[in-house]
Image 1 (cartoon, rainbow, N blue to C red):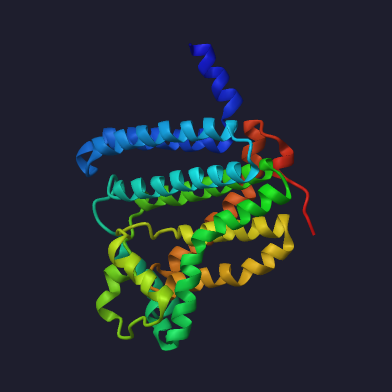
Image 2: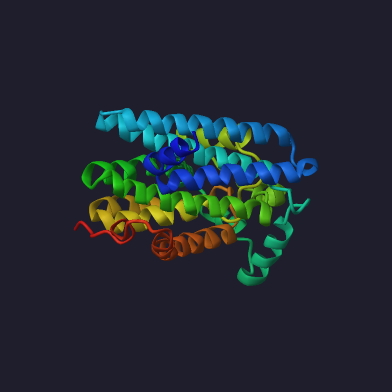
Length: 304
């Protein structure tokens, strides 16, 4: 039985699969040893186990799927859902080390560095049309994964999409760990009473505000996962397919701005998120080399 399990893992699991399952196990251990500081700690452990089993089942199904479109959608959706789940668990662990929010320190830092609060300063530019574009790009972030993933899967190979998935997973989880190492709520939590100009727009503004009110929890701010992942996706697009890069560039830049404009993040969150994205981008080839992964995946040729 042990040999069969070893053969299964060697034959069927990619680097991103092993990494995500390891993070689920690590989070279970963290929730277990910090039970008193984690709300529903046992449910976190059981949930992690359940997600790991479902994820392994999706990998088996993926291996047996012959349809290219089916393989793509199964792979991109399963990885994206596990990453979203890990993000949600990170928010439940947000006070595992530090019981208080650090927003006041971020506000003092930005005031000292910039002389203003950037998210308050941006109020002078607010208009319905601009707000709608900003909310659109903030939400469009969730479409970036399948857009670039499909580009790599169908234009290059499954191996190139695996390279993308491994890189973005490392990037996202590094941001997630930051949420409980230095817990920051969000600008609305700390500065909400100081906003004098409401964010009025149209369809996407309504969707964004609904998500803020009903689907988003405090935390997940420092560093900005939006900024970090958008940086990785932009760099990946530039490396693999320039037309996709030029198509996505205005959106990526707008994501940086919209995260502060729409009051989801402090400017500090965005700066740190971009730096983490760059750090992962520069270090992932060395990490892959250490893990013995295919160097062609780490430094693939470019399509012009």
